[in-house]
Image 1 (cartoon, rainbow, N blue to C red):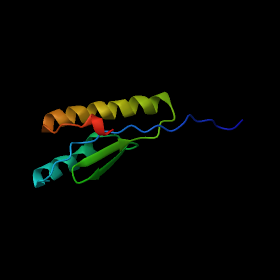
Image 2 (image 1 turned 135 degrees about the horizontal axis):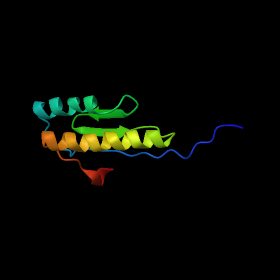
Image 3 (image 1 turned 30 degrees about the horizontal axis):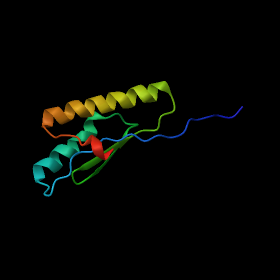
Image 4 (image 1 turned 90 degrees about the horizontal axis):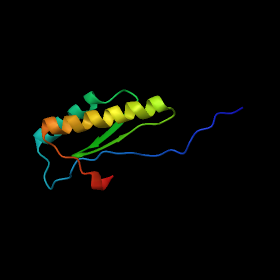
Length: 87
């Protein structure tokens, strides 16, 4: 019997875009990678960030939720707001 997978779904977290990017924001955003697990991808460009992970089990789902929760805590600590409307 072959493996069966559910449809892939994407979830993302995006930081507000601003008209100007300052060096401090770039330094803060580069720190984001340190708070997510290895199997979670964090794509960073300027002041934008997308977080995603392949979900194949309930554990993957729990770990991804942990990463999202940790990123929210990170955003509070660095006082950088997420723009959930862009997800």
